[in-house]
Amino acid sequence: MKGKAHKFGDNINTDYIISGRYKFSITDPKELAKHIFEDIVPNFSQKVKEGDFIVAGKNFGCGSSREQAPLAIKASGIKAVIAQSFARIFYRNAINLGLMLIEADTSRIKEDDELEIFLEKNKIKNISQNIEIDIKPLPALMQEILNSGGAIEYFKKHGL
Image (cartoon, rainbow, N blue to C red):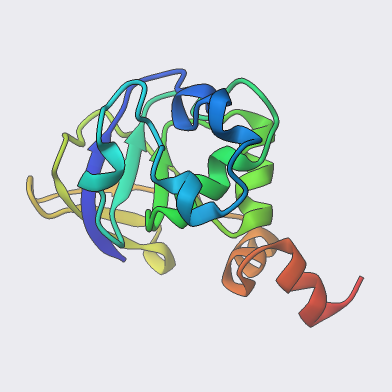
């Protein structure tokens, strides 16, 4: 996986990701994705390219438990969210929907840095700065769920 970093800080809540005014009025994920982060970064959805990464600090995805936030991120073309830590319910919703979450020390990653992720080595290569960052390994079952495209696809493939 290779893409550009879009950097955020700590405690990015689900209302920053997708405003509550859209959560129930828009049901199409692609349409919802047009509004991600618009309250804190106007026109953010137009800056994102397929395969880019969101990079954040601690407690990413705090706030409401609704799944529209990870759904909108995934539909925007973001390949993964890299953060120091994730809110528990956001983490679960994201994995269930097939959105890759990566826990790592993000303090040395800057806005627009070019990153390459090597999951098999548990490393992020920051191409812009020529440094490597360790990734907290993802449990095997969660990796299988992500590789299947989310929990529903995993259960279709493997049964209950």
